[in-house]
Image (tube, rainbow, N blue to C red; front, side, top):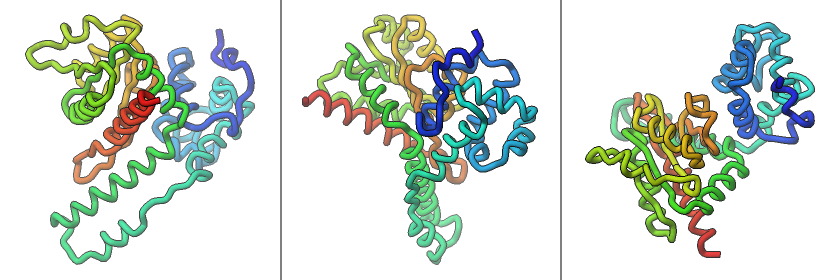
Length: 284
């Protein structure tokens, strides 16, 4: 079956947001031709360029013929490329972006050296503020509701994260320990990864935090959960990761970065949101 035939009705910029469109691209990715996958890769990696550039420029940068952009738009359920591009434009230009200009001003006017603790403090703060405000406009309410619904319906919530992702996973586990939910923090201490996950079932849910370079332990847990039909909620830095298509809900976060050190502010922000939202459900 052609991908385009799966779309029951033609979509418009008013029908969906960019976050939903990206989820659709991921779901259909494996069924796309190599050329259309090339467009998908470019759109996922360079959404701002898709929003602002002309069709000719986008085709050149994606290294595809103009007709391929039209075919990709049709495969995603749009009447034409301009209709699909409107989704990208609405995302970046028709939604509030209240960036803290005063942070930039404080950084520029301060009388301290670029490598001083005060400069690093301001730079990390600015990077995290901008990253979290970008997250606010990129995550759809529907995706948040879907994730909370999966958590609410689970008999056991398994939480997993390795290496840099571990602090965010640990915080999520710690927060949910205060709730009425049965939660398990999955780690590999003492070689207990397999014993801790063997009881997972489709009545549970796996919440995984994973960032590049992806830990093989995380890949193993995700694959095991998928084989057992366990719903998976992922917080990651790339929805196009190898296992992205098997996630039930996938949040893409672009953390603030300074001097080569990436923050975890957005991941913890999402973890707090999901934990508190679930606890609010428990009190009703």
